[in-house]
Image 1: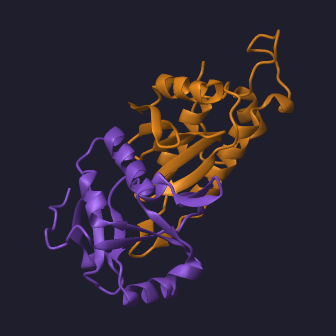
Image 2: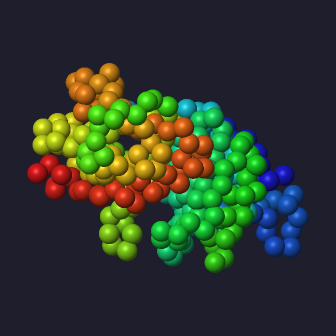
Length: 154
Length: 128
C-alpha cells in the first residue's frame, strides 16, 4: 500500500516505520530500522505540524491558518511519495489555507500546492522553462510522483 | 471571481507583503519572489504603491520584504483587480484583491509567471 492516513499529531515512530523505505532484499513487511526512514519525509511532516499548530493572520495581507483536514491530506499525499529519495522541500503556508512545497535539485524545481479542497497542483521547471505541470484530486499522486522522479533524474 | 475594476490602470504599481520566508528565495544569489506569494485557495491581497502606504506597511509589518508588480502584469495573466476596503484594517481603498476564474493548474502557472514579473524589495529599501 503506497498511501496511508496520518494523524494530525507529529509522526510517531510507528507511523514512520509504516512509511519507511523497505531495505534491499527485505520484503515490505520486514521490520525496518529508524535509519531507513526517508529523512525528507520526517522533516516535512514536522514542518507541517509546526505550521498547523502556529496559525498566523496578517490583516490586509493573508490568513495563513491551515486547517487540520488540509494538513492531514497533505501528509497523506506526501506519505504516498515515501519511497522517493528527495531533498528536503521548503514547506510554506499560502493564502486561503493551502500548503506549498518546493523541492530543488540544481537549477530545477518542483512546486506543489495542496489546497483545502483536496486538489493538488504542481509545476516542474528549470529557470523560466516549465518542464511539466499538472493537477490531481485526492490521492491520485501518480503524475506528481512521475514529475518528482524527473526532478531527480534529469 | 470579482469583477475587474477598470479604474485601476495598467501602470498602477502594486505591493504584496512577503510575510512568509517561503514567499521568496535566493536564485543564483538573487532574491526572487516565489509563486507561493500569489498562490491562494481564495483571494490575494495587495496595496497600491504610495509613499504613505509604504510607511503604513513598514509600521504594520516590520522587517517584512515586499514584492512590487504592475496591475497590467496581473491582468495579462488572467487576474481581476478590485478595490476591497472592507478587508483592510483601516478601510483603505488602496487595498486591492486579485481574483481569478482560472482552474487550479492555470492558476498555479499564472502565479508563477506573476512572481517572475515581480520585483523583490528588501525591507530596508522598501521603508525608504
